[in-house]
Image 1 (spheres, rainbow, N blue to C red):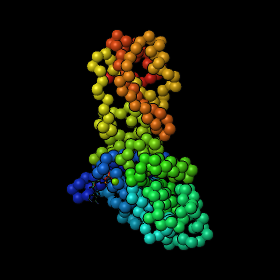
Image 2: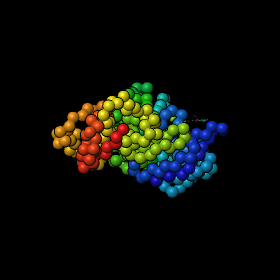
Image 3: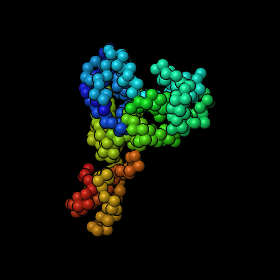
Amino acid sequence: MIVLNDVKKNFGELEVLKGISIEIRDHEIYGIIGQSGAGKSTLLRCINGLESYQSGSITVDGEKIDISNPKKLRLQQKNMGMIFQNFNLLTRLDVYDNVALPLKFWGMKTKTAQAREKINGLLKLVGLEDKVHARPAELSGGQKQRVAIARALVLDPKILLCDEATSALDPGITREILALLQKINREMGITIIVVTHQMEVVKQICERVAFIKDGTVIAEGKPEDLFVRPSKEVKAFLQEESDHLPSEGVNIQLFFTEESSDEPVITMMARELGIDFSICWGKLEDFRSNVFGSLVINIRNEDQERVLSYLKDKKVIAEVL
Ligand SMILES: Nc1ncnc2c1ncn2[C@@H]1O[C@H](COP(=O)(O)OP(=O)(O)O)[C@@H](O)[C@H]1O
Ligand SMILES: [Mg+2]
């Protein structure tokens, strides 16, 4: 649905996007993660035509995003709702009128029965039906973001772009907002792009993710694949260390992925091979409610062959470190 092909963008001398190529599919939740200054917001702004780009192409539903065609661009932008870290609500307007703003912008009436039904329906969806006439100042951060989400959906977009939407919220509220985004994705079929510097966000809701660093994509794929079995480059990106391993014996890293069996392989191996080993390092993490991870065990040199062939039989991915 959204295809970026070798997109380059610079601000004067500064190259911010150095040839970004990614494809975002219909109805998926796609993450773009990277540190501050990596070019994430610029990328998102290029996708919805708030910013021009120098070369390459961006197409949404087969139509090129072209800032020199403002009439067409405006229609394309109608199809893309956007939310931000700081919510961008108008403080003098109540919740209802904030949600109604895009309708107003498009010259539509905001107090008709149809508009009321739409706006009240969205406020119900985001769980704010009892705050219709509250002002932003009377709302918590999480509630403000809910208003912003309702506003972003009021023109029935097919795409929702989220720029650090949870970065200003505490962890509990972040989880609630992410659950809401997931519900919107599932129930309304809206494609969501989540730009963030928070790993937790990607792990919790993204089906696929691009890691961006200094304006380039260094890795792309399912979060569980990238996080559970990171390449050297991704490891550096994640600033993850699994050193402090014993220098004696053999260290073997096991990976538990979607394909791994549910059998208690580790204890079975100890029993069946009659060996002992120590666990030196491990991580198990939740990805969209599945648990994946890896484990480093230390075994005696003489057990290496038997252990590796046992693990192979059990279809556990293992690497000697
Ligand atoms: N309008 C602009 N003019 C000049 N430089 C900009 C502008 N917007 C962003 N930048 C620069 O582009 C780089 C990427 O910024 P940004 O896309 O905001 O990164 P991120 O969202 O990943 O933190 C930064 O070095 C930033 O200073
Ligand atoms: Mg940003």
